[in-house]
Length: 87
Picture (cartoon, rainbow, N blue to C red):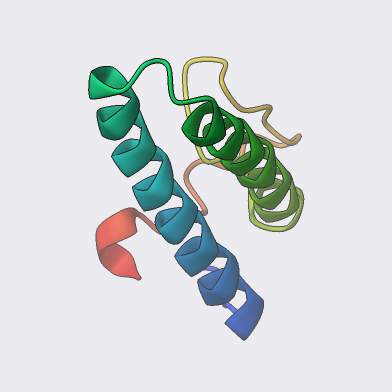
């Protein structure tokens, strides 16, 4: 049985996708501009922001990452969350 997903699920997922995009772009920029202190500061701020969003998401909807990068609730709930292609 698939979980009922509310509007906050989609909002948090969209926020995660947006901040992940920013982090990828900043990573690529910093690969070619490693001394840009402002970009490094922005990357670090975005990293903290991503952790905050992920923490809110995982508290409500379950783990985002496998292999020990995210804690699991009890009972094991990986099978109940929708797969990325289901949303």
